[in-house]
Length: 305
Image 1 (spheres, rainbow, N blue to C red):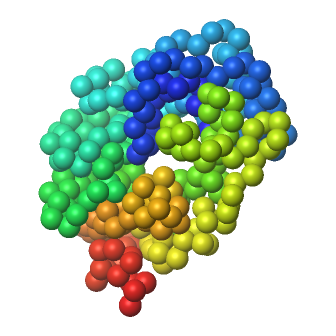
Image 2 (image 1 turned 60 degrees about the vertical axis):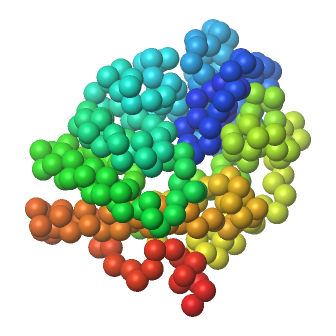
């Protein structure tokens, strides 16, 4: 269960949150949801706004096992620190797990800043704000930036700092798809006290899929599962978030990705394969996944054959 505590809670994924007016979830709705989470044995992740919460909210939050996702500087107890921009990277503490939302062009222009961040943190999650709009002509520059970041990762491993970068190292370690799975394995409690597929669905004004009193009922729930996503099911870009919100934006179907999302994920997969080759040269016999070189850049090409 993801709990978006306020309308202004920071985004930690592909979706933007432009809401500026504070709307904090009611204590009663939060209490009911946490009781439900305990009864259903659900893990809880709180999305914090950029201001301090009232003490009664803090007490409720600390009454359950949870993870905190918070903007940098809000709390020293954040499990994931959200950077609104790389300009504030110096506020990140050594060993933090950090999330930053940037475009492909910003990533290409910020390799040095991202590399400096990689040298300080335990894990860096980069959420591209425009992965769904990628076209083939834009990918060489992105691939070059990923290779440069991969060189930083290799250097850090050589000195015993086993940093993780979701765009590169996840594919080296995973054995199967590890997607967002919103609607199938996760659900979001929004500030209005109702459940939604994910924060993006709430922020765009979608219909809720339940509440703590009535329970959760996702229409056509099978469509959110990997088993009913034929293109994704045939793919081995296991690190891809398979974002159902982006899917719907591009194809109007939650189980069908747009081409841009696939092109981006496969550019990252290929960069992971090149990083594996460099790791093998530096440290033969390492435990990272072997990654096969493919003759396609979009799994739809494979399916359509």
